[in-house]
Length: 60
Image (cartoon, rainbow, N blue to C red):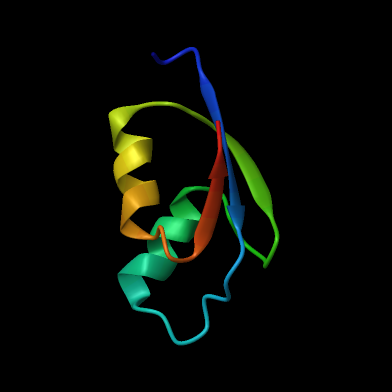
C-alpha cells in the first residue's frame, strides 16, 4: 500500500479556515492555491486529506 502515490491539489483558499486545517495543508506540502503534491498512500496521509477534504482534490 505504501508504494502507491496520491496527487493532492489545493483548490480552495486557506483564508478564513481554522488554524489546524491550515497546518494540515502545510504538512501535506500545499502552500499556494492550485499547488500539488505527490504523497505516499498511507493511513496518516489519508487522514490528513480527509480532514481538509473540502479544500483539496485528490487523484489516485
